[in-house]
Length: 296
Image 1 (cartoon, rainbow, N blue to C red):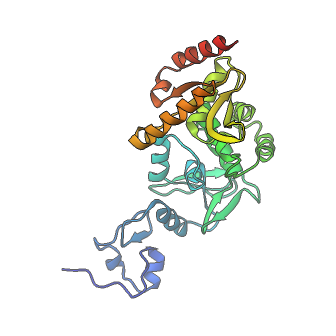
Image 2 (spheres, rainbow, N blue to C red):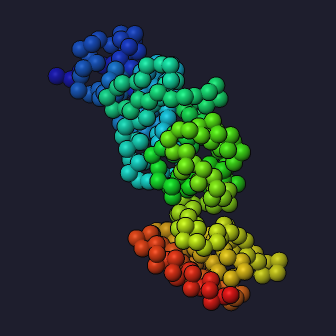
Image 3 (cartoon, rainbow, N blue to C red):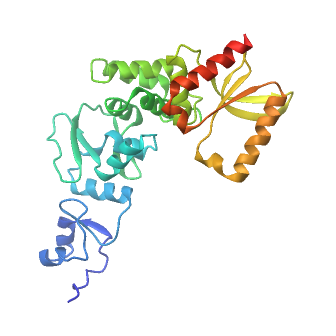
């Protein structure tokens, strides 16, 4: 027997209380054609991550907000794949320290110290501001991942917060967990970095005692633009490029080879870094150290 039709105007996702207000009976709310993404909610269709968040917040007290790694996702900040998947599957929701922590199946509740400007609204969703997200995730991310996220927050191309704003909030949370990692990330942060892997390669080199390369430098032949390279040691004329999976595309590979040949013709040497180099960073460091030594 098919369930009875829902009232006209029933949204694709709604809270149980909203459904009752529309005149949907308790029995109809238990029908198998409606899913329950979270306790006290129903959905007529499959929901994407943002829709699930909206529905969750609709079911929670008005003072709740998205925090932690889930907030980082909303701001499109880089996270490790495992953390990203967990943040989607089990959204992090927060309340101010004096409120009762959210306890709801399928979500992770937190009580946080937040100021007046620490929670903002984006696309109708209450979420921690980027600088406050930085504090939140610094407690769970490794230093390489935190540096990548820090670079993304202060990025020249798409800044979400300024370096000075991060310095201020770092002082506010100076005694909180993750303080050493935050201090180190700010010491090494570079607003010219444009990808997480670039940031992580830079950290490997610095930790090995090598100088920090310049990030995303334009190389010209006179006035003619030749290339914009990921990292560069100018005096050694040594270029370091991280090649992600998209470089496997035949057309992209051909363009890469032409670009490399032109740079080498201008007297630059070239180091290509791939995902596999992170399996043996010491070997990568030895390779770059030899090339730097050869230019001195």
